[in-house]
Image 1 (cartoon, one colour):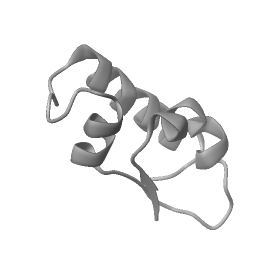
Image 2 (cartoon, helix red, strand yellow; image 1 turned 180 degrees about the vertical axis):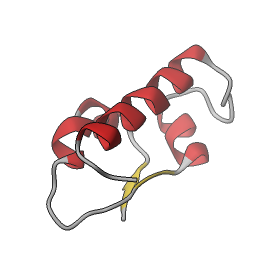
Image 3 (cartoon, helix red, strand yellow; image 1 turned 60 degrees about the horizontal axis):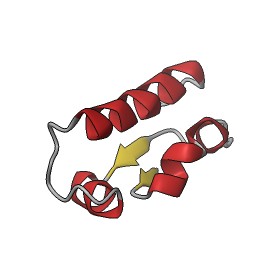
Image 4 (tube, helix red, strand yellow; image 1 turned 60 degrees about the vertical axis):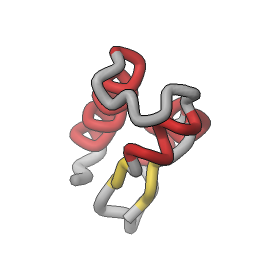
Length: 64
């Protein structure tokens, strides 16, 4: 399991998802939104875009 909780992680999500041996990308929504400067705004377009990036990278690399 790899926790995705920072803007830096989102910026590098494709490389993170490519790590062998990691099978799950887990987004910590509160931590990520806080680190994005939009604390608890989980409906924010910026936040949902970040989630989409994680989802796309997970699918591309066969992760959950």
